[in-house]
Image 1 (cartoon, one colour):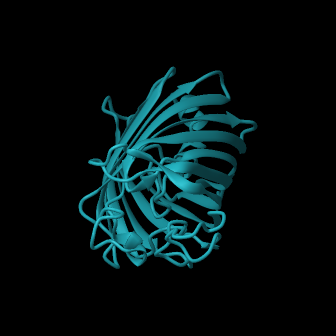
Image 2 (tube, one colour):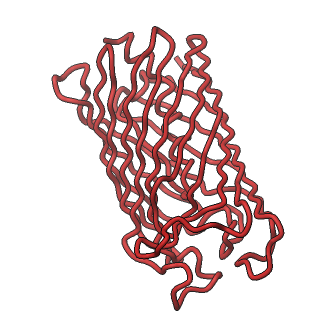
Image 3 (cartoon, one colour):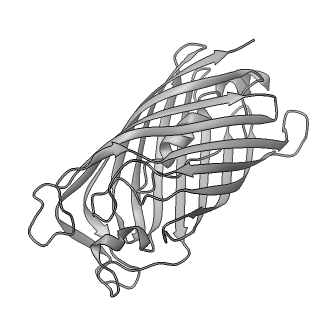
Length: 294
């Protein structure tokens, strides 16, 4: 069982990268699988998301609208994960991004075709209260995180995010065996500056394909608890951060533990349903390095 757990060392950071594939860069994703004490990993990732369609609101027909130009964003992420004990770990996710909305076409709600800057930073502590290695029950963990707004302009269709500081909390349940692993996270996110609060869910199914390869399928949901609809008064472009943005993303990944310390991951996803959000296609590559301090 311990060998199986070690094969999952790259999963926590890869989960965080997949979480960034949606239009909510402030969010990250936790894991109930904590590394061995005094060990951790660093991760460098490139994620591209693009589309020429968006979901306006759940009551709009047709729901999937065409944009006047292709909207895209490239993000370079840095992730850090470290286990202080076998029950407590820290993780950090931050990065920089550049968006592109060519033109911009006349009448489009943006002042520039491109914006760049630092994205939101997420710093979290995870406390695992149940360890499946010493219990018949699944692993259970609580995660709390602080969100620091990035250095970018808001109020544009191609803004890098919503801005606003805040926090999030979640409960995570995970279980792995020799042939399959599964994880589910349910949480709540609050941010300042009139950004609607979110409820979110992250689910993953992970299947080892040999001693060093893991394939995974993922589902991610973000549901804003209030907010404006695009194009419906009193909405105006400066109030983009206040919209009710709902996201349903389906994705997958391939993780290759090339050596005991190096992991390479390929990730992809698609926003298949939503409200006031881009119908994005997303792809990413990630390189991770494990380390220890003992």
